[in-house]
Image 1 (cartoon, rainbow, N blue to C red):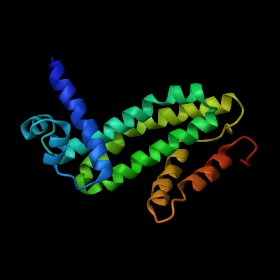
Image 2 (image 1 turned 120 degrees about the vertical axis):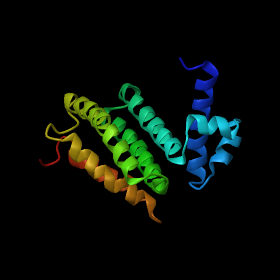
Image 3 (image 1 turned 135 degrees about the vertical axis):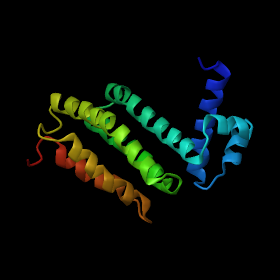
Length: 180
């Protein structure tokens, strides 16, 4: 059983790392430990490598994203929920790719494989809600939608962020009334 203080340290380290890495992808492990208010030994006990910490940060991002689906669907139309959720997904994808130097190819592959099915399930849930209310075409494939979002993080990374206009085109394409 993990002690409560150990769980709190772990959560604080990951959240601190998430914020620090968003500000500066080159932040050191010691700087993260200092910001989190723990010693380097505590940090390395929980996350023995930079890669382990970066993976934990990405997994936290994905978990928060997956947990947000129900609330988004309760507060917004399915199409708007999908827009907001996809924007958050693109941000998480951009962070993951921005931290690519900290991840080995095997780790990148592993995180992609472990998050694929839950992400597809979340997309499916929002697409089905839109199909049920008649705003999203019935022939939209969640895997195709996810693949299209891959272009969005690249569009958001350039000097001119075109991700929202591109997302608008994607959502227009899946909306009821768009040609099949």
